[in-house]
Image (cartoon, rainbow, N blue to C red; front, top):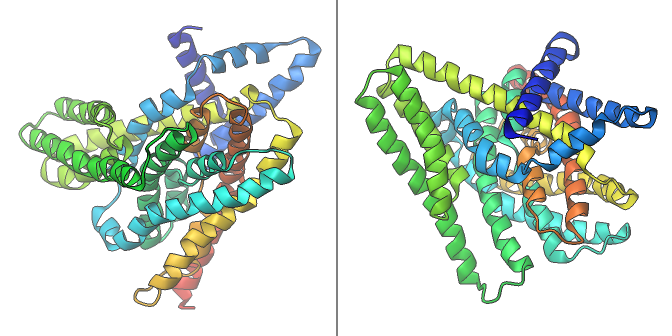
Length: 416
């Protein structure tokens, strides 16, 4: 199937599922679209036995899509920039301590907690997955997905401080998780000579280098934006920043997601207020909101349809069900300990630990990382387990985080 036909199918499906959700389901957009795509996948499974074999065509199409390349080396740059563009830097700065801890130490801690617990859980169901691959599962399932969580936060009217914590962490921790994932991939492949200093150097190069590169690329773009007053040129400059900046960061072996988030924060705050006219700001906001909505829709259609490409063996399903509480326990621990310590010298909104735990949604980034694992006897199991955790996260946690946030708002407003 040609690239044009694949795009035609995905965009048409996204439009139809968006319409169904808007008219009938009335769920948060990303959740409704994915649920509609899951139901469509189930319908295709049911049509097969009665002689209508559309499932084969959809499987063939999914097989021709490299999910890892499509998301991590394509869509992610646009989605991260669009998310960072509307995050208030002053709100983020007030929560910087919490965000830094959760997006760095929190990701590493979650990786090892999930890796250790899942190693024993997988043994219980007959999956002899080596410890290093359990750690890889911990790394790929650790990041909370900004794509999944940002829209839900806005609809739930989360307090500014809480929204800044969740949004800031989710924008940065996927970049950190990719760094951890790359280190573990090298260990899993048996690469010799990988010392502690090599790991620290890789972390520094990817993470710190990504921050510096993103700020530098954002500053150059900011200077160019300030020197022109033409919204077509200015929108094109932001597109160049996102695509060219992401690609160059990858070539330089820097964390491209971290770089684009930093560039997006700079352009979205200083660039919007100091380098753009009101007309340009309006066009820029409309353009990136549209890009964000369209790519979000396509991504969650892909997640919903991906179920057709997976082999759901009984032991994989059981391992996936066991992984759900493991991921939640790890998230609760990695969030609860630092916030409990920080409560001694700063205040937090009510139920912050519960909200950060339950609001730590997993999404397309985890699926893409799982699909990028090397082909061996463990990959299929880990892909299915990841998929089950992601589906639970988006459907169950995503649909119930709103009431939890509203309950916290009521407590805060009543002074309890």
